[in-house]
Length: 283
Image 1 (tube, rainbow, N blue to C red):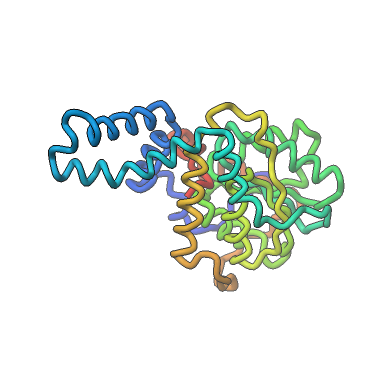
Image 2: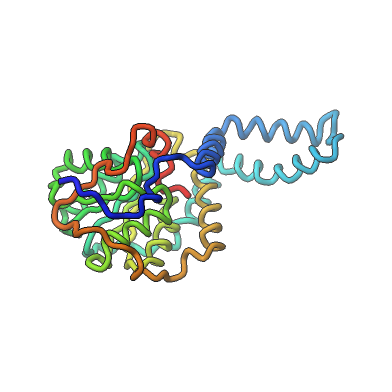
């Protein structure tokens, strides 16, 4: 059954904004270690080489860029990278095997869909929660396909295909699932979990964090770019006050979802998929 969620259509507007275009461009740079190393080398050559920062404005840009570039390149070292990831995961409460009202999977692009689906399917088969909810524009079809392949019944699935950021993941999930669902098992990758957990808590959910396995992900996942973006996102969300409790009674709930409503591409257009799949929960 495909259910048309009665959500704010402006949230589901497939038109890419300048902000998302800029974010995608910036993310592609952060996920290119070779380019970042070249930028560091060029910066050092400019500051310490024959030119020695001859032009004042360029010198200021070079000096202000030096520390971030050094930190980024330091994250390429396994020990430093492990320490930085520990800084994002050490604060997470353990998953003690408690049951919940639903399992919520956050989309983060096609490369992470299989591991998330496998984790969620195992949780569902173990009886941890009766329903699975998928959140993230561009990820619903792929994760649904993987869940069905793992033996999860369609009648136990529901989803929203609108959200492009962690904030929208939490807001739209709350609009869909409240008040019937209050306790959730949240499935996402380790670097993203802390920000996701704090944001979902602010929308009134009791959250049990469950980390998806990333050990066998492509090399690109382990580049420093994702970790840098998570630290920046964690701080930015805090500055914006997104971890404080929200008023959720004003959220407009859609028609009842349980049992058996799966929103496969309810608002998705072909042009939208390629832009959204890697952005769904990164802001």
